Length: 423
Image 1 (cartoon, rainbow, N blue to C red):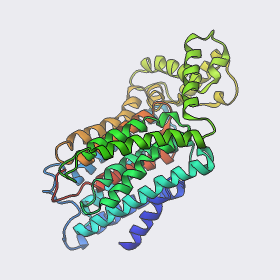
Image 2: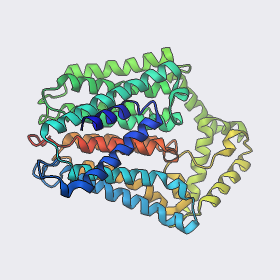
Image 3: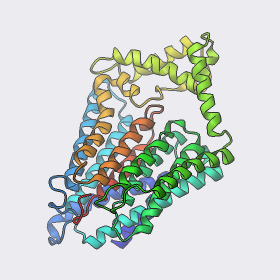
């Protein structure tokens, strides 16, 4: 038990700085789950990790099983058109990574036997490790810049770090009531991830500045857990944190948040009122908007099964020739949008294959709204962060993001047990 916790601690704490550490954490979820499932008949029946009466019909094993079926549905939606068009099978890595981790998570909460003290130790270990990981992400961006520090492309890396921040924030309110200092540490480290998002320059993750404070508001007013309503102190702390975000970003970032926002608005104006010059489409915002418009037109005509991967890439090349753009942008094989990409490529089945994760997380949050408000808020925050960050990038094109999304969902499910409290 101690050795496993040490490995999990190291993996999660370093996950924002190392793809190998993230892979280790993901692998541990699967391996431990397989171990518990394979040895369940040889172990005596002590207290299960999941108390079937603790959350009425919404036990952690129930939620974990729902998540498994969500991942199965997503995999099927994507595998059927992939088989129909003859590939590409390597691009199904997000589906199998999420599904395998979901199975591992389910087997853990279904078959592991831990005392209340042991389970509390697991939660506190994950909370401290997640908090360290978030601080490492901030320090790495401050010292080296997001592009040099991130173990993946900085855009999906920041999206993944954002989901971890949402899960860590919820986990902070799931530990025992006597651990106020750990609560404060978890809240602080989660909130400073907003600073990381701003300094990283990844505008697609700036929604975290709204998601985290709103999530904190609903978590803090939960009377069943800490009997604390959103006090002036909490509101003041959040406000100061946001101002600190903008101030630190202006000091340490080569291009301040204000400049990034101004650039986005300027490029948007050029796209809307430009003369059609190729220069309009050479900006980050301009080429994205052109691809979104083009992609949506083709998505609406893609039918049930889509046009396939090869035809999808050929369409993009036609667009680049039509816009007379050149340079690195012409090498893109996606629309910089996690919704449009599978929709055009695999039609309505591809669209469903992506949206089922978001809708599934929302469904879980809704199902837990009365029985476990803390987990419900956590699932909502992760769902919103997931869908928002996918609007401006193809996070699922990278190995790192689906692994971290798996880890974030695992943290939320593990955080659920509290036999004395239904908050």
